[in-house]
Length: 194
Ligand SMILES: Cc1cc2nc3c(=O)[nH]c(=O)nc-3n(C[C@H](O)[C@H](O)[C@H](O)COP(=O)(O)O)c2cc1C
Image (cartoon, rainbow, N blue to C red):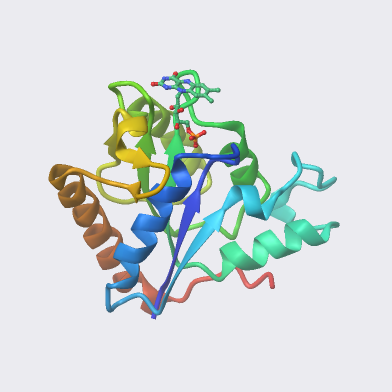
């Protein structure tokens, strides 16, 4: 059974992405087809800025933090990336985490949930991320969901409180990534670099 990793693509203390990711974790965990669903908080992963001397496509990693990150991503069959918009684009922590690896991302389905304080919901950040994911050989799945006015949707105590329309959009995205992950799970995943 496939493993879904929900990556919170922000490492800002107090990030709004964490409550959104936690909500998605609960929602996705209720779905039969996933053997395992995990939350990957980039703040917790704590990668430095890319410090490997060799190109990630070689898979030759000098540092343990890279090997740990490689093992986590290699063991995942599908991804849901929750990303904030910073100044019209995606944040550096997410790009850095993506750039650390190469083959581990390849051919795996990825769905995007963006958020921002403003009315766009971070849609431009998701759009900007698209060519990066394509370059890594990932398969963008479903229409990215944008969450506008994130500060009103996230409550310090109650967490993420989506509107019914947002719940429907997120459920549809989960359906899509579930279907693609299950369809691909027979073909064998993993880069073999453990
Ligand atoms: C550096 C930075 C840049 C931001 N730029 C934008 C922006 O261009 N448009 C927008 O609507 N909100 C912007 N915001 C607000 C964020 O989208 C919002 O605070 C969101 O919660 C940030 O994600 P985070 O909580 O994971 O850090 C920005 C916030 C930060 C910290």
